[in-house]
Image (tube, rainbow, N blue to C red; front, side, top):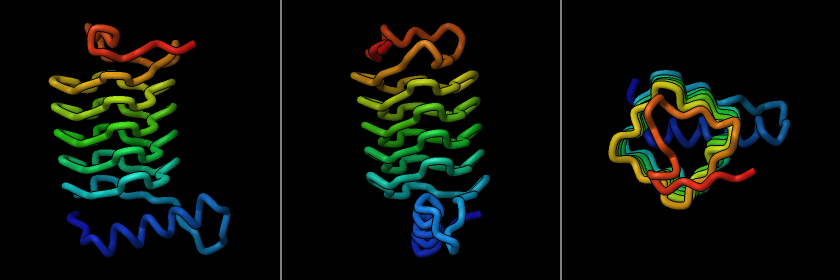
Length: 146
């Protein structure tokens, strides 16, 4: 389902109220939504559910996606520089050509993710981060943190 910018911003605003514990807030749940080229720089999207969503060419620099459910999401050529994916569920997601420079991937599960041509310069990960088979985060420029 393709969402208009106003619909996306309404969902974001409701999610912000949810995170603040306000009674009229609502957790963002946009499973399989088409968010192509959306711009959500610096937005707090902690706990969102965007499983299978199309986020191709999206701009999510410095966005907080901690503990988000992003299984099977499409981030092809997305700008995710400085985004926080701590403990995010990213199984089967496509990051083909995405910019993940300086992203926080501590505890993220990237099992089966497509990381072809993605950049990871200065991205951080820890012992709980699960990478796809055959992927070497150090060779990609990511840094291990204890």
